Every structure is written in structure tokens, then in C-alpha cells.
Image (cartoon, rainbow, N blue to C red):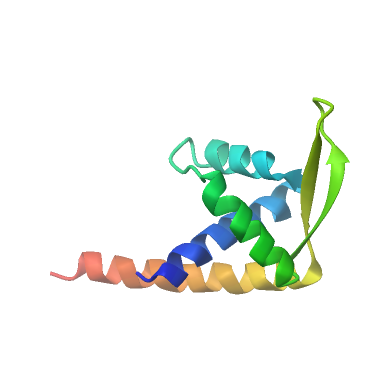
Length: 108
């Protein structure tokens, strides 16, 4: 598995989260991934924010500053049309990766 596969997995998790949950701030993305994975996955801020920035530069997400429920300012992210297309592509790519891994694990 290459570094691109790992980066692609984080992209997939973030894009899927925004697709399911709508607009969220970074910490909301982290919480959703942890909860949805039954605490099996955790995303570190040091990985998340560079990924969000890269995805925004790619046009997959957009962001804007808003006030949170706790009256703090935070950048909220949302999926774009291009992001939705990238999500579909990433899901297919991930399924191929899982299929390949399963084939290796079954090999006797």
C-alpha cells in the first residue's frame, strides 16, 4: 500500500463524512469519523488540516468562517460538485483496493 493509498483513504473518509453530514468544522469531521467507525479510526489534526487545505485547493470542498455552537469561530467545510465526483471515484478505487487485499488474504 502506497502513501497515496493512505492519503486517498483520508480523502475518502473526509469526503464521505461531508457528503453524509453536510457542512462541518474540522473537529466535527474528526468526531464523525471516530463515532461512525466505533472508535476504530482516529484522524490527527496534523493530518486532517493539510488534507482539508489540499482538497479545498483541488476544488472538492469549500470553506467559510462561522460561529460554532460554543460561540467560537471555526472554518466550516462543505462538499462541492467536483468533490461529489471525486468521492464516487475514491469509493470505486477503495473497493478495488479491498478486493485486491481480500484476494491476497484468501490465497493459500
